[in-house]
Length: 263
Image 1: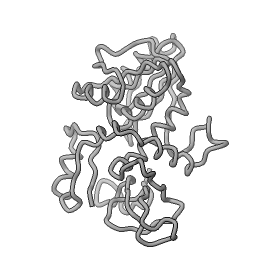
Image 2: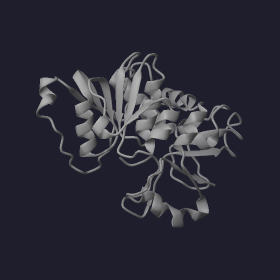
Image 3: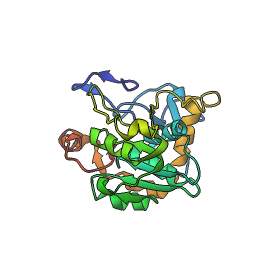
Image 4: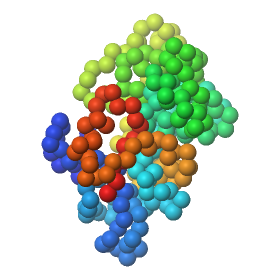
């Protein structure tokens, strides 16, 4: 799962990142001075193939445009899920992916969408995006569709518990090399539940015949034209301050959503 243009490998040293927004200062005339998004590691200047650049629309500010890769992941998850109007939808895990998946779900006509998270402070941002909020012990049941994005075994247990008969649970979490126990006994078989994976590396099968990665990336970028999504960026760090401030962002007890580097 190497990022495009990555150098080195984890844990460190590694040149990593895939959410860069910048202004073109050399290249094809039609792109000069335009803001573009690129799946490129963090640095002040870089050279990238034109095919790797996604123009940023005028109604999407550059700071918010860094969310494009996450929005693309959330969009692909909905295609994998087959979500639709009037569905009762639960999202377990209120990180950036869960919130974006919830925001997309809340735009479906008549959909009833609830975010479930262990952190009570997520309520404010959930409600800002048009979602209900619940702690795990009050999570809704009998959902038509559940997205799991907490990357924890307890979250997956909650997600399975939220699903109604023959409902689909879409696993968006990235667990890395870890092994995660899943409670597939009890009601899992009795309710005939579906547990499916969603991963952004491939366009969802339901769209693959007509959509390529470039079309999907442009669509995700256009979806960011909503001022409410600024609530998902909770910290801004000057690039020169990154060595001192990034350890706190990477720490397990960090409660922010997205930290952006400002050049």
